[in-house]
Structure formats: structure tokens, C-alpha cells
Amino acid sequence: MTNTKVEGIIDTLQVKAAAAIPQKEGDYINSADGLLYCGKCHTPKETRVNFSDQERKVRCVCECEQQRERQKQENDERKRRALLIDKMRTRAFKDKKGRNSTFDKDDRNNAEASRFFANYAELFNQNSKWLFISGNCGTGKSFFAACICNRVIDKEYSAKFTTIAAIARELLKTTDKEAIYDELSGCDLLVLDDLTSERNTDYIREIIFNVIDARSRSEKPLIITSNITPTELSNPSDIATERIYSRIYENSIIYKLVGSDRRREKLKQNMKEIDSIMNYSGLSAAGKE
Image (tube, rainbow, N blue to C red):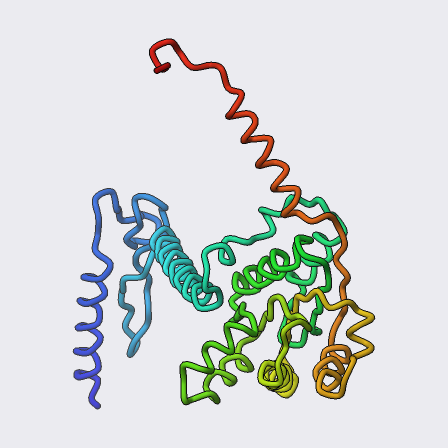
């Protein structure tokens, strides 16, 4: 390519650069170096380059335009991330209650548990240990598991919050059962809520084993909430149960969640509110029938 053609290309690029970075009101020529400067940030919008022993002035981006472009990219990235997280959260939870369970809504009645579960969520990675949360009804097992799940999603890990009953329903509706198990083993975090030893038929136990086994083979984190006690977990009653419990016991941090039944506390609060409304005597005369 001849110098003339190269110079023609450079001239074309100069014209395009000048169009892309136009001179605006307030821009000025700096008498010190003869270059165009931005009237806002007072940094160069031109620079000098040498080509074939000739010096040329070409347009460049001033600092305030660079800052504006960086801000735009950051805003676009925030929007992309927010959309991604929202989609991941919708996919993880079937209900609004689960999606809204976050650590900032924790009443911290059990400060030790609150700290442990929040720290587990912050430290979460794809090599995290399994977590088995044992406790009676109403102690907050599902709430804390959902909080962890939501925090993990905030960190852009994929997650799934489900129950064995829900998995069984999905399996009954499809002929592609392998796809169901692939989803359960593929997400970064799986939460199995309300695992119980009650009403477990051979069919249900087989589903539980398949899910646990698939998760074990994928070497990815699993959280289980259950009313099964640590003692029961370490001493299964039969062989069918043992092959499930042994995998859980070997891979899990076992956390016994103790405390009062929050549902009963809520019921007491409801009764107080009902009494308050029933005993209200502040109606105006106009409001009385």
C-alpha cells in the first residue's frame, strides 16, 4: 500500500473521529499547545501523532467523556446483573414468600443461628459443605434456608429451592425424568426443604436417594431442612433409609436449630391484634350506625 493511500485512510479516520468527537460550545484551543480542549473538564480533545515524518492532530476523548462512558457501562452492567438475578430468583422459587425471605427481614430472635447462616451465605462457593438444618416446626428452618438461597443468588450463583413432594409431582408430569434430575444436580446450590421420615413410601425414598446421589456425584452444595434429628440421621432404622442418611451425614455440617415455635408466637400476636380491634372505641358519632 502506497503512502498516498495510507494518508487517505488516515484522513478518512480523522474526519470520522472529528464527527464522533465534535467540538462543543465552550471548547477552546489551548494557547500552550495549540490543541482543542474540553470546556467542561479542561482536558485535551486532540492529541498529536507522527506519521511518515509528519505530525497530525487527531481527536481523542476528554476525561469527562471517558467518565460518562464508564458510568454508562457501569449502569448497563447493573441493569444486566439485576435482570439476570431477577430471572435466577424467579427460577429458584415457586412462590413470592421464598423470594422475599432475606436476612434483613430476620428478627434475630436466635442471634447465634442468624450469624451462622448469614456467614455460611457470605462464604458460599461451589466447594461449600452441605448443610443439614434440623429442628422442630416453626423454628425458622425454611426461612433461613431461603435467606441463604437468596443471598447466593445475589452473588450470581444459580439455585433451586424445592421439596421432594414438588419434585415427585414434576416427575409424574414428564417422560423426560433425566432432565429433572439434571436440573437438580446442575444448579450451584440446591435446597431441599422439609425433608421428613414420615409418609416416605418406597417410591418417595427412591426419589430422595436419586436426588441426594446426583448431588453427591456433582460435588455441589446442598442444603436440607428437616425435622429429622441428628441422632436419627446417624442411626437409620432400615437399609433403605441408611443409604440416604449416610450420604447426608458424611457430607454435611449438621446444625440443630432450637427455639420456640414462631408460628405459635405469631398466633399470640394475632390474638392481641384481634383483641385490640374488638375493643376499639374510637369511632366518631357519624361513624356509628
